[in-house]
Image (cartoon, rainbow, N blue to C red; front, side, top):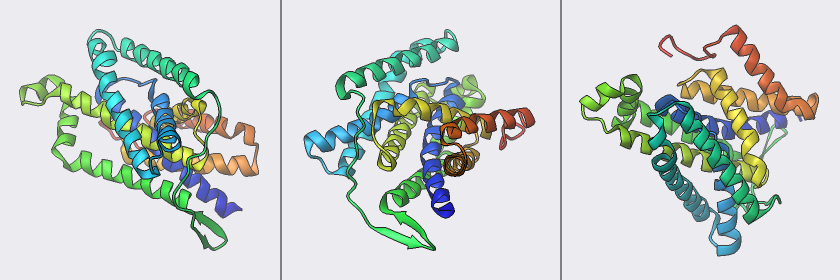
Length: 285
């Protein structure tokens, strides 16, 4: 049971790291806390369920279409709800995305109600490894989650777009002077962040279920991961996400299940007291 619990914790951590990665992008580059990120997470799962159930689309295609749709919504949100406000006040974009969260939450409840739905996964194999059962779903969640974060880190580190992102963060005026289109950087940041949220929601729904209320708890955990790891450290956030996932599952099995999520926030507060800049923050952060 201990090994199985650890494995489930790693799978949970893979989902948390996708959510945290999207939050890191919007805060690290645009300097806003996207309060609607949890509902984008939820929307990815619910759209996938709808496409499979009512349009008869295969799972992989439905998931891809849902991610593209949510990423496109991120572009619209940036142009309509963030860009017009971001130069006026730092608070206004956060309030605007909070409004987005409420709109999606209430609109989603009107469409899907508050029922929980299962996503049909096309594979059902299992691997038994030393008494631990590795199901097709959990292996997919771990591989896709870790693979996506590593690919994102490599792309941001090596690609021209990643260098333009870092230049925008360090000095927006200087970036514009050397020809960086900062509006395009913000557009792509929101598209990437929203797509990561949708992917995380789909993987989370595979592991558990798709429901309207799934976004808010994960959003809070995502913020906790980002804060505990240190702003701007993608790989550090991935490590903290796994630690949080494993800790939550162990405490749920061997401790008090009702307080397993609260334990993560206690851990975050302890980390901030001992190391306010986060576990993996560098001197420049």
